Length: 256
Ligand code: F6R
Image 1: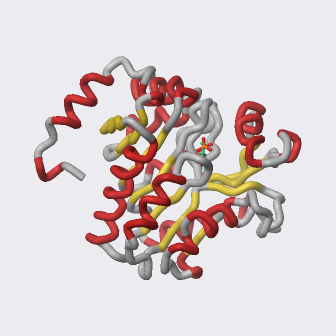
Image 2: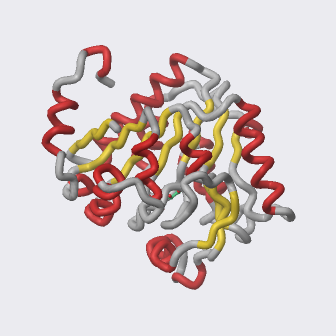
Image 3: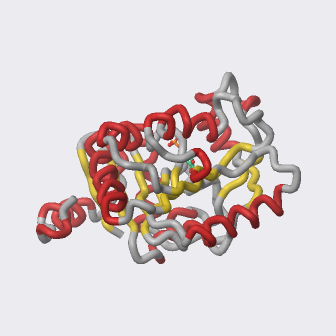
């Protein structure tokens, strides 16, 4: 894992945006895995400002709520179009987001996996992290080998996400999410976390044991993971000084 710590969410997101921009320049038909929530917003703003060519890019989102009408403002479909896609030249047919209203959810989930495979696999997967360590909506004790499937949100996650809805009761209980096994097949994972409320989940994910109690800790078993943090999210890290040292002493060819 490469831990990149910056003063603010914006400056950490610029690093993440440069990593994605390089990917799109090197391979214009890249396959990107994308996330929603508050965390990727500064990343998406930075990418929009870079005015990249999304004409050949294919995207797969991590997750979606089950049961909300597609045009509901809090679906991840609405989120992605509002906060990223409509500001780019991505082709609508190249955008993939799980369908939270699929009639046959298990079948839809296997088809989603098949679409990722058929596209050639994900080049870079963008991830946020829940206060309980979830990535995608793989809540604690999710199988570390899991694939895209239905999950039930924890009370903690519903409470955390109530800020986007009128109240906690309005947050759907069920979601479709890529599994940890799916995420682990991405060629690179780019995890972003901002704010002190993420510090514990990040410390456990980066420096704790690999355990389904903190699903993000599975990323320790992935060969290419970059973790972009602001200072408050890094406060629980015991080796923060080493990560800063590594970052400050990178060979020129590794600097983004
Ligand atoms: C969203 C997702 C979730 C969020 C996590 C953090 O697509 O997969 O894992 O990244 O719940 O949410 P925020 O960024 O709102 O704190």
